[in-house]
Length: 377
Length: 252
Ligand SMILES: Cc1cc2nc3c(=O)[nH]c(=O)nc-3n(C[C@H](O)[C@H](O)[C@H](O)COP(=O)(O)OP(=O)(O)OC[C@H]3O[C@@H](n4cnc5c(N)ncnc54)[C@H](O)[C@@H]3O)c2cc1C
Image (cartoon, rainbow over all chains, first blue to last red; front, side, top):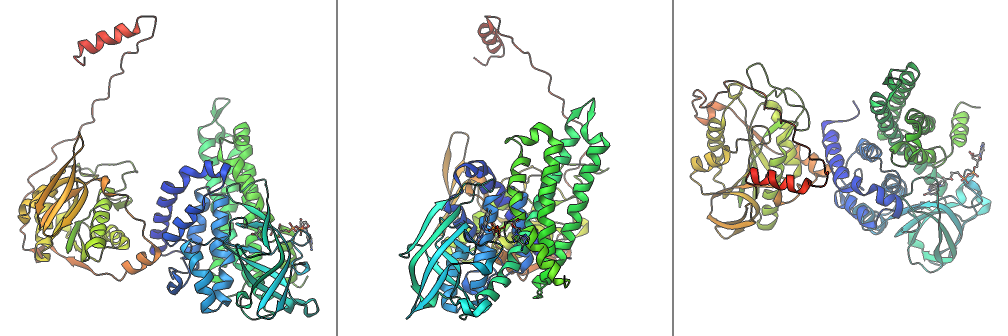
């Protein structure tokens, strides 16, 4: 049992909220991106702080309450908004909650939980993505300030963020203990959003390129102890991969159900296409693989929730869940035929949105590198 | 201010409704808090926010109705009274009103809020009967409820607009969807609801003798299917033919 009846009750409320206040606008937001006001609404309802301490406005729940939100966002077909909410609640804020001081939590975490601040996390750079250790952004200590110089790219929420958790290098000599996580607030001189990028999917979310030029922030914006950034980041990435996997399973389920309904009602050669064995077996494969991935994701999420650090399994769950989501969406397009290729039907967007899963939060190849290493390969 | 809101668990109105062999609604499937009662809870919580006090839910229903009650508690109601007794299965409107009245009376509320009618039975009879049994004035179809001193003032929805109706508290009010979208419960609210008091009351404790029901269902027949209408194809004089039809049915 992963979900209690309290989780299920929460699920009903989230579902009704998405039904009434989000789904009617999704098409419009695909064109114009979602408004900041919807993030505030998520905050008002407590959905951005489901598992954060009540002291900072959180709801004090467990990891599975975050899983419920991620699943319902995916089931509602939220795409980019789902990603933005996940970045806010499960990627940019966890390091502040886990490693930050009380004062930092009041300044950065509480407004992000309330939805009055939008948060982002910036690791990737034009010349370093998978090879995170190769980032060029430098943070130099100058008296009681940090001075940042560098570029970040593909940053979700980056264009609108009130604050950004920036991964920077401070000491080239110190290897993995030369990195730091530093918060940069919007409007800080020397920080600018240089571009908003156009992309294949996740259209309702903004993806930005950022520039830091002699950008000075107070020393108090360093999260945790100096030189701990790499360890903090590796920990953060586990949570990021875990929540992505949960959403991807629910997205695959939604598309499988959609394709089943379609195949039962679409007629060809005098019968529903679900009657053709090749289509039926395809649907069965979609449902079966998704069910298996789901079990594995839940099992791993439970270990993460209990405070274990199962890097191998989290990487496996993320790898499998994102590959499955893309594969399922691709099968669904085939089952819908020409309709599947059209914007009026949800499966082409599901495919475009899901395709990110095999790249973001670490590529398939990087997951396999991590898993391989865990087996001593 | 003490506000009682009556709540009922009903079969999920979005699922197909079935009858049991004795012509009662089959309550075996998925069940939910009556959406009409969610508006009652919302109205009660708004008044509590404005005036302070307490919102008490009162429900009659089988053991599993506890889920519907808990939903109201998750939204923010303070506590609940749940009258549950196997012998009450199939209770008609009058018996229901008697039970609710007996459970509500000892609470001495300032205001009782009900939905206008249940979404499953749709008799709309329980609230007026309940008002009568409690000796309270009733104001029905309220799309807005205000309390000023010891007066309850409502905007009573009518076909033409609304009437402003005032009653002396304690009073009973039935509310429509006009009172505002029921709030979403937060996880904190959901968790807190699990430790709120739900007082279980049995029939014997209310001192009510269950007589034979005043209503019984003698039979059930399908509604007559609507006959296909006449389609008027426009061959140049459709307007006249439509006008002739409207005159014939005295619509114009
Ligand atoms: C829509 C979107 C949103 C994003 N949001 C964020 C965000 O909010 N914050 C953030 O920091 N980043 C974000 N990213 C960046 C994302 O995490 C990176 O794109 C990803 O980690 C890959 O890095 P890269 O693009 O530099 O690819 P590269 O590292 O250049 O990889 C190119 C190819 O080489 C392969 N490769 C690299 N190294 C190896 C190896 N050792 N063995 C085998 N193959 C290898 C990769 O798997 C890939 O196939 C986002 C990306 C997208 C597309």
